[in-house]
Image (cartoon, rainbow, N blue to C red; front, side):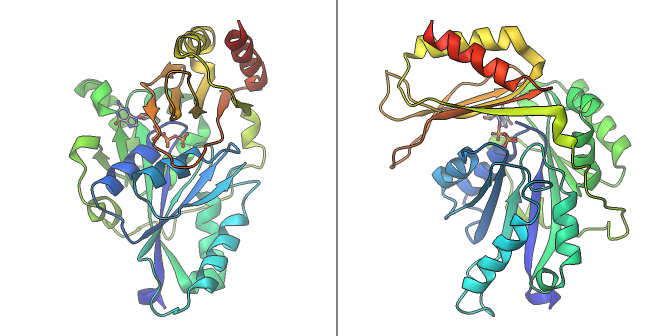
Length: 320
Ligand SMILES: Nc1nc2c(ncn2[C@@H]2O[C@H](COP(=O)(O)OP(=O)(O)OP(=O)(O)O)[C@@H](O)[C@H]2O)c(=O)[nH]1
């Protein structure tokens, strides 16, 4: 069934590396029009799903509230089965590939094993590529301090260096050297949102060469090194208050605050804005053009166990 099976591309990479941005650039460049996206989010709110949809992806499927490699290990299999069984003409599926964007805290190992070990899935779907996205700005630090990020590189066939606009050639060369030491067979490609190439350039070369590679499930407690919390933000906030609260947060917690992401309403705008923070650095917010009312909330992910403490700090700042 190899020729008629649906190829699956896994896009992996640590928190805030730029996975969604990379996929959005491809979609906005007119690529991936027959692709089905499955998005895994550790938080409850499906921001990446909404962002992909806003860029033109058709009905992305959200697997939220945990990692594909642990709590949600079986959900991928159920989702693929469900999808396949709904196609009226199995010989002519309505899609030509599936892209799975994993959460930043997921190892791709479980998905690799599931696709290899389940014969029903194996007859209908095939893993064609694992693409790692690595943040050029924070990648070296991330690889030094997070085993999970190293795993993501080990399992990747190709890696993209995102955020190259934020580093110089020497920093890029150091990161490249580090990645090649972890996985000497990996293909490294730079990503610049403005210079995005065709999807095939990234997705279809080369074929996977790692069939003999040892794959093992990540330890079930790998998430204990991190904590995640969600703050509901039902009310619109004056932009000045929000900006100063986020500024205070980044100064207080810096590197411990691995990721802040979510959608917030501000008093000055009718549409919500998207907040992105990576390692305590907040990006310019993006206005989210959504037709429906969007549930406003922020997800905070920290190294260690104190995401709740950081969330309480933020709530106090917003009330001040
Ligand atoms: N300057 C710059 N910013 C980027 C680039 N790629 C991504 N970003 C920004 O980095 C932040 C995080 O990007 P995402 O694409 O959401 O990262 P992600 O890997 O999907 O994040 P998680 O799913 O939460 O792990 C956003 O504010 C992006 O706009 C890039 O090439 N250059």
